[in-house]
Length: 367
Image 1: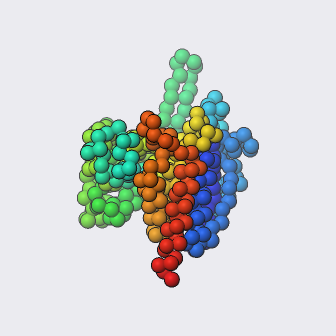
Image 2: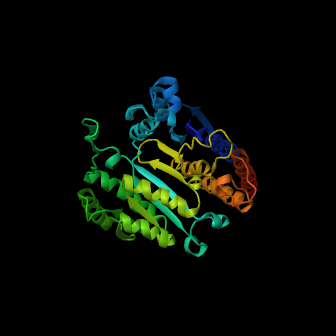
Image 3: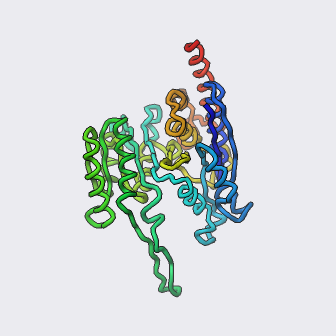
């Protein structure tokens, strides 16, 4: 199979983690007999510095010409004083729109080897395997009108949360379909006791459930869901929610399983999938070689599964992550006091080597 991928390393630790994810992807392609075509472009702060635009036309064109996009991170304090449209994050929001990526998938999985990393007791977090399905192109992040207006000392800020029935139905359908491939339980999270958007959300999701009688649907307010995630995370399977609630809950889930550095994401629904680790650009540790590349590497696994439908290859990458963790390899964010740590590159190299050996074994078994 031909794999056409555009790489957007981005800002901060983005280039460091993406370089390791690319090494793994290249090993998958070589070992399993695929033709990988890579194109690297700029986004975010690096694009602003070079082109004065957080998402240049050349980047958009390259992304739309590929089958999948692998993104590192965007964000730099150097642009904090700039207007919204000239900040790195504006490039990411526009990219999601350009790709039509309305469904954001964020898995949060507990790894037994990292039991000590979770702030929760092992008996509470053990067995946690959550998939958060977040609507990505609506809600407060995109709603109009939005503004800050008025004289200093009397300014007023406005953001608008807005959802239409087709937007809700399309993301809910994705969540129901994914629940069918897992444990067939779907929790829809809203705030329907306060928000009109949430009342419409609950109504549409409930109606759509008739098309999926094999999936058990339940509803919960977002504040109750946040509490339940901490009290009993193992009780969740697939969580469906709108843009802002999904943003918050997925970061909370990352803390529960041990580190944001472990979390991958897939943004799908349009013609080109966007894959990125959940963590930010972390400028405070950029360039030190200590960033955790697992979120980026696991994003490659999501890419192999959801864009290229290469399940065996995706499972191989995920098995490499588990094996490496079981082998005691830890980046700084995963290490306990006094425990030896490895660099970003060393962690990536371990997983790359696992994939290489697994591909050889697979080929030998097939011959």
